[in-house]
Length: 399
Image (cartoon, rainbow, N blue to C red):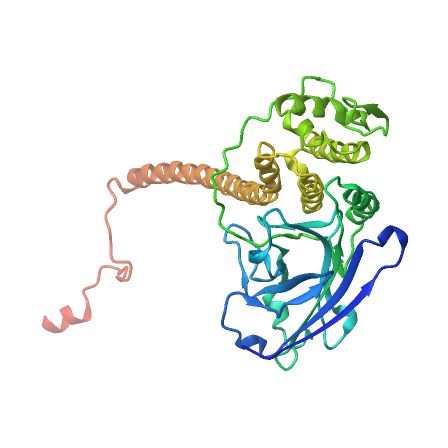
């Protein structure tokens, strides 16, 4: 393993609305990067916000055989002391990774989380990016990301501390990040890509069997959000278009109401607004609309709702199924293209078959004409002299 140098820089935000946020930067210099032998490589442990963290990379890359994605460098932020923490622990953070370009810092590769803070917990100890950068780009000597076999990674971490059981700080976090998430979803950044942050891959411990989600009882569901608010079951004012969807799922899953029974009105409003927005997205979005941007937005909506610890076992399979539609669309495009190729070749085959049929008919006619002409026809030597009745010179000598 190469020599690793760590450097941490910390700062406390002093603004009143950010008094519960502690942020810091950790720089990880990895020597002899190309000689790393393990599939997983961890940084030294560092502390930000009173919590212990570490970075996990997959230097040999990850590859999904079902997609066209090439081998990629994977990168995750993880809780270093998860095994020693008490049950029910949770940490909320925003973070970003920078793969430093050592030749031109303006070309450094940056990816950062968006929207609601990521929740680290016992069941989800690592968040990050499966596809941070193609390995072919990383190992390009002229690119500047690997110089003298040294790779430099920076992690900036913002930790939300003192989040109480009543969720007041969760609500503040949601409010402060809502506008940020919507703005970032609509922008197309070059140096900073939309976060595809996701848990580090692990083998599922259960088999998902998607239940029937059902259809809202109201057939009149608005596709467009009007901004008009409506009281929802005494829990707060919610976007009017979300109400029929929420009424349906709450009647099927009463625990959605019960889990927020002791929360204050602001938290309930925020929780059901996020859940309603997620349901509205799933209700109004078509399979053909599940582009990469749509998948990023759905992932962000799902993470927002998870913050409130609803029992969403009934909804999770549908969200994952929707997120998988991107792969389905890519495959559908390939199938469509191949079908078009088959149609073209089939048409060409029919054209050539028709031409062959005409040629065969012409051949039969030519054979019949040939047979007629050959009747009574005697072959002759085409090189023989025509002659004029005199014996040949050889015959005269003999006489």
